[in-house]
Length: 190
Ligand SMILES: [Fe+2]
Image 1 (spheres, rainbow, N blue to C red):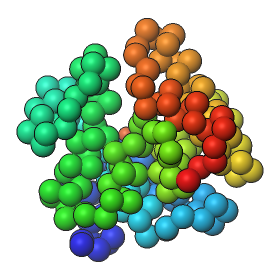
Image 2 (cartoon, rainbow, N blue to C red):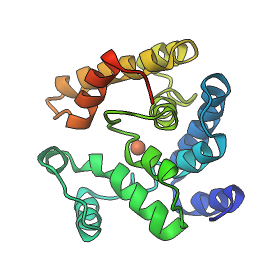
Image 3 (cartoon, rainbow, N blue to C red):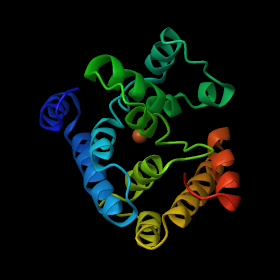
């Protein structure tokens, strides 16, 4: 597997400046959350740096790559193909960066939608993506403050705010997101 330093170097070349900075900020926030909640800091770093590797791709390209890799695209993803940047990000992390660890790949794959049975590492990336220091809108501040006291509540709050935001724009809500929300009402982060 590529070293973190090599990975950073490579991503600096591949990603637009703002996206690289966002990824570095997600890494930084993941480290902070890891200090409080645990998880695997090394895996979090790989996931943080790579999570948006496919974010710049067009919907068409995302659909094409997902299909080529036998991912079964659902109706919601067809309606809002940008959702696929997580799935395709995990595919690229594996194919182009040699990441085979399912913990890292799942952090990337579920960073936008979450999922039922979300794990600690996945929850940290999900929250850090929303609360990293470059995110200075009010909702990010609210979730950031909660995340230092109660990680599960931070996931729920972020989901609530995201879903509200999407609904206002009349965008579809991914089933994984709803399943995660319902699951966390009775279960803990795994
Ligand atoms: Fe993303």
